[in-house]
Length: 84
Length: 348
Image: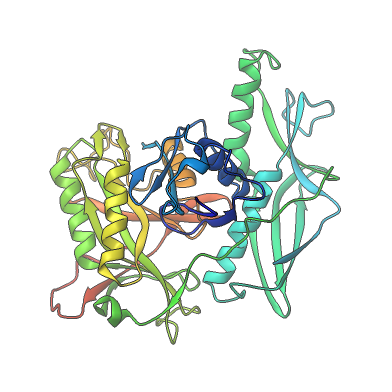
């Protein structure tokens, strides 16, 4: 089972990792973990839909962290967003 | 990092029906997140300028407010100190215009401000109710190296900011401008690889050893371009990230370019052209930049027309955080080691 998660944006400039025995636990869901990362890193949500990817694969936002494979330790967090 | 804030007063945002300093504002909004971001921008700029250590054990943070008619603030400086190292950056009150606009829209939506009223935003000083938190304060990844390790050699035309030098590989610029012309009125874009490199010595005309190098661009049909908008595809961005890893040069998807369209072939000289210029940064562009590339070291390249220019080709402009806004940043071309090509025109 996962013991830590390392979060990052696409450019790897906003990095944060946490163990699953403190602010986040195996009972939390992927969407909650994403929300936690955004709050911790002071990243504005801008009303966008945010997604977590591990090894290039989209993680189901409703999955509990305890249900994820133990290789899903490095997440890339991205919004669905358009430039003008 | 142990961070200590020295500030008896901090800026807050007030909305009122009065053009002058409000006596009875409708609403007062604290700017905790925004001020923290100002500190982050100053810290990252200080590290990239080689004037602050990337991983200081302690950092003193202070705000120096410049008043118009007190308590109205026209600008403020964020001043950072770590031991003998010092760095500061100025933020004008106008840097909070987007927050004020969002706030007014929200308050009109909920009826707290009458819809037909004009709301004036004022940045004023107030005693903070609680301190700012700086947990997210961290320098971007910077690695020591040489341009030759990236397959790069001779510098080309262009100009470097002395404290924020950016190099773009000549072929990358050419690929972006070709893609912009091919896409026509439709916007195009793609992931750009790059790295923050700490050289042995500063480049000529600069004061910092740390240079931002943009080395590759991946246009991908999965991104979706339209007239006046461009949507980045997650799978395409992640594939670019994987390719960066496979190249083994320490690159990452440092940013993504998009175009503002290119149409008649005389867009630069036509006063009637309806396309946005490559110098225009829209609110959507801000949103992309603040969310997809939230690090304060990011640069935003935009390709497109450059009004009043007398040539018939699109141009590439860079924008970077400066005082809470995305402002133009000069850049310089760099040639491949094995290249003997001539420069593009010196417009950077």
